Length: 425
Ligand code: AMP
Ligand code: GLY
Image 1 (spheres, rainbow, N blue to C red):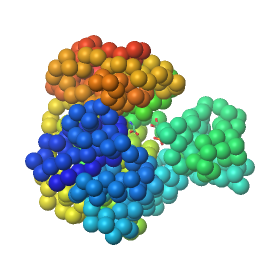
Image 2: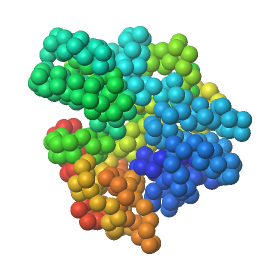
Image 3: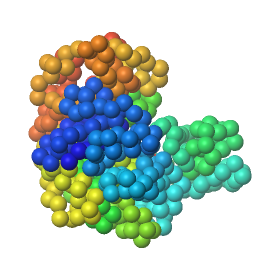
Image 4: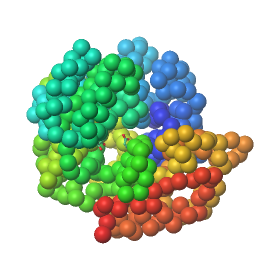
């Protein structure tokens, strides 16, 4: 089979690496990809939200399946585009259609979905500029901290958590009337703050049955000890030690089953990944958010732990035979540490030469923001490279990642030296 992976991050490099293990792969293309995918597959320089460009390469390269990495093409309807095109409609797309992608594309929609299907989540209400005053009144009924969420996609920046009620009111007004996050904050969800520890579970579904993939915890803040600005993710660990069988059974019964059933009941034919962001509140799971794709850098620890042939699983998704596919997970810990450009998540420079990658031993190197330039590999984004390792324990896996990181350099390299700090000791 010829496969096209859409996207350019560490997640997509991890997909490419995993898919290449399948004997069924003939050719693998990544659009646009990075220097890492370029080494093991063929990059094609197009924008994944330019659907006409995607169509052109699918036809030109006889692609048999499209795997969508990031949310933007899904939310913008790449799957619907395929289904409505005579030449493309028989080519499966791994990733939901627009209706399913709303689980990530609209916080208001996802909260309504959870409420309707009795899925545990924080209490909430949604407001627009017309109901600003009612928003102030709702804030008064909550205890601090106050959680304000832009309804639409806001590049991971649309959630504000504020201690002070006056500040919360001012920010609500900024979001609703001054379009702080553009059209994404035309509607704002205000919700109760949940106190607990976060983790994520991932589900692959064909719309009828599902496989629960390994759980993971990511480290979103730039600074050690979970301080400073939010990033796309500075590292991840799988499995999550506190997500024991007892907790995961609750997650499956209270969250996963009702989510898959709810999609069916609502007539949403969902084929792809569901990323469920959870808060463990005193042993009980509450949904913080849904994403309609895999996480990054969570993919860099989740996929390496899957023993099964990923392409087989994707074929199961495409033909709704996922329940017939075998699925097994490697019983080891995987950790990943993200190397980032100095300055990220604020302004940073690109084009810095990366050296030492060939010296890495015993870890997987997943490129994120990299590209080839004059026979060199150079930085091309905030998050640059993820170093994934296995171990019997978190400490052992991290030790391998950090030993290898010492061999890699580029100007203004930065990374967190304390990934897993809250899970070890
Ligand atoms: P979201 O984009 O909805 O995942 O929110 C971004 C981050 O804000 C989450 O990863 C949590 O750390 C935090 N967060 C969101 N909602 C809540 C909540 N209701 N209670 C506590 N923390 C939250
Ligand atoms: N690492 C968080 C995300 O992919 O959304």
